Length: 351
Picture 1 (cartoon, rainbow, N blue to C red):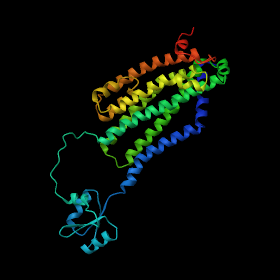
Picture 2 (cartoon, one colour; picture 1 turned 90 degrees about the vertical axis):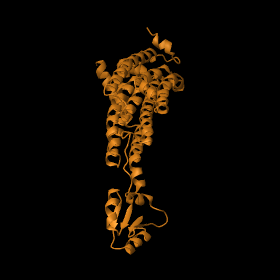
Picture 3 (cartoon, rainbow, N blue to C red; picture 1 turned 30 degrees about the vertical axis):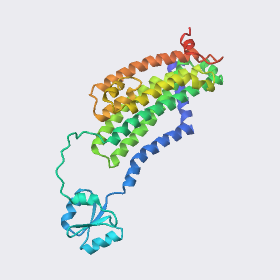
Picture 4 (cartoon, rainbow, N blue to C red; picture 1 turned 45 degrees about the vertical axis):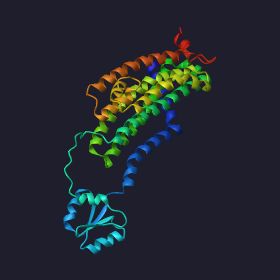
């Protein structure tokens, strides 16, 4: 059996085990529910267009153009009755006058008022709420997925080492095939989870009543986020396997994985808290550990030139290759050392 065939065998086993794991299934369902809820709940809270009764024909057109649900009635008395019965939120009657129960309907008054024309000096500007939520969502999604799946890789390696199962595995499967299979399986599962969330998000913004400008920006942003996510995850996955191999038992894993946890955590905090600093976010969009989060943010805001994400991807791919070699060396140098926690120096200095 070749190394490639062995890696495929290990990957298939890891995928089957993971697809039966209730924690994995629950986390996927949770993310999907949160994604769907972020589009459905605002629509439910909105309750649809405001209903207005109108007995004044001249008021129908401006109210309809302002997206009110207009009910034409024959006279003022009928309009007033609809307001008192709670069938409509307000009524426009002769005078003209606006009828309401206990709160002045400023939106109806505004639709009937003559307002001066407005010229937007920055028509491309993004809503401030979205300008914060999208960067936070992208950074958090990359962090939580890479951290969760990474820890699962490390725990799986440590468990196999602690129970001595790894000694049986390496007697029939090359060490590199074992590592490649684990990394490939987790990368496939993580990408599948992210891709599913991305599809639900794109469908949600299209069926929801979201600004077309936002929809136009969000689609390409998610499309670029996926390749950045894959390379970023692969870059870290082998290191997670390496720190798992350094531990001789599960209790050691917290200590061996702490440096890597910081490597994952600090870029996320930098992107979230410094996303409003254009100079810093531009630099972070080229730094491999933060580019999977920072570059999609710049693409969403329209701050990145066409060539910039390509350059960032090339830098990320080169760094991933280096990290793969480093993680592989740590993994191979410590996997069969079962007499205690292995140091980075010992793992790297293997013969």
